[in-house]
View 1: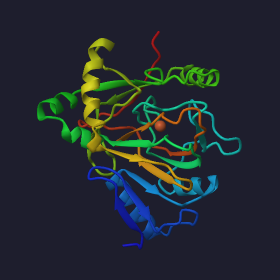
View 2: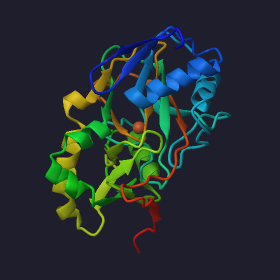
View 3: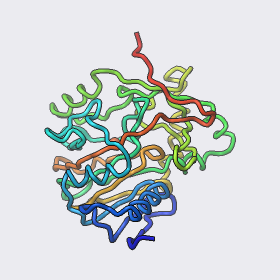
View 4: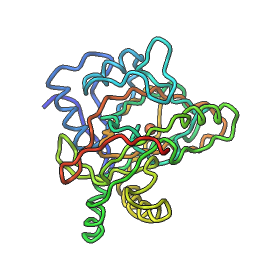
Length: 286
Ligand SMILES: [Fe+2]
């Protein structure tokens, strides 16, 4: 065991790692233990890191190949792997799994505090595997059969500013759609989880109005307070969540204050359902 400490945030999800310096190259044994904690706790938080973009990129890169340029979001000039998450451009105050409107959603995402508001702007992360486990057996049997259509046009919160509208329009300009199993099996742990969130628009084979109440019921199990971790950002903070078995939500309660995080995402694989069938891209509606 390496000499860092793990402080769990709750019984279901989340841990703070202390005694690790992310500005330095992590040794293989330390990384192995951090990776095991990442799979177990699904979101890891690191305080007092104060790292650069390059160091964030190199930390994230330990988990797998990085996503070069987000399909729909602006990236930093000269650093296409770094997405500035800027509250003046958009605020992700909805539960979602990153880029689930593509057939290859991220493996995980790292976020780093760059500019923080004087209050508010917490990040919530929910354990979607616990959400699945919490389903009554009868409901689980229903969820096991379902597939959902995810699209970037499903639900995108409005900021109510000109800049916000511009970014929102760009995000939704070209439709990206994918069909995913509602219950996804984690490629590393084998754990099943509810794979839904804000981009899940409707269920395959059902109309929107038929899908909505079913999606809402299933989602309610994921976002139970017991299944979530809430992180209040401090300067120097870094987090990484497992995008394959979580959803996250950026709390929009910091008024007109500035909040900028830098996001670096790791490329995932094609989700697999309980029966082994895999997700696929959908053509745009004619
Ligand atoms: Fe996100």
